Length: 371
Ligand code: SF4
Ligand code: SF4
Image (tube, protein in one colour):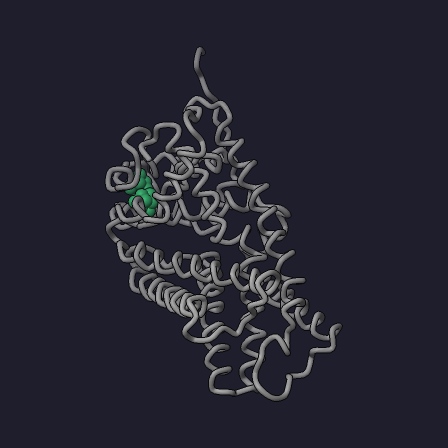
């Protein structure tokens, strides 16, 4: 028969969706309420109903559907779904699987998403940092005034964290380039991108930084504000880290910086924004758990890594100021451990959302999906 399409359900894929947090996917009976109440979806070929159908039918190609990244997990659809199919949670599970699909090595991506490996993931940086201290003869806590560079020399920090950063950047770049190629491949339901890539990328980044799409959400609207605090906290702390690196290598201006210095003020504001945002995200996730879903281990892993980075950074500073040596150095060690986890595992955690969502939103903008 002309035009006939045979669909072969991949049951293993359906089971993976269920295991990744989309355990309600089979409840969907395709009423389309979710697409109607979703504010961020474009009018043509709206999400998330079609993604629910693809996931139910075991169509792995849904991972190449850029629309899964246009969803901001506001949960409006989950609240209104008459079947309790939680489409917002299913879309989140699909994004997790998309990241795992494109990340290298896939084994590490699987480990980051599986609570069984949590201890191993934490043990790796702990042992690496301890080994570095042991080899360089810095294992004992230094006497006298608390100076973190006496305990963990700046050169040693650079020797570990710069390669970790470039490893993460390379894995993310490889993954997102493969993803970009896939979403651009010919398909009956996709269109080719057109227009100025750089100009559209700038407009997309502006959209992301201002959280314009995120702010269309209703049920968990405050999430967008909390998310903004975390984002700007990150940006401030990234600028501080960048300046510290330049100061160490080129400007002969090393930390600790005096209170009144702009770089110090930026570090304090960045840490406060990060902690305020992440604390509110934790609170609002718990408060909305019943109607919007609590999120799975994958979501909470990322949330707690950010919280650990902010909390240990703040405590390291406080303990140094009040001179509690016995607490300051171990807390600084934990701070380095959590920062390592944040960067090194970034291509496999929700941190990778930043690059995949940017690519998908860029595709949407350039293919006329209304972004
Ligand atoms: S997820 Fe819920 S609201 Fe959406 S189509 Fe399925 S049953 Fe209807
Ligand atoms: S979670 Fe929000 S953005 Fe995502 S599909 Fe549902 S209503 Fe749309």
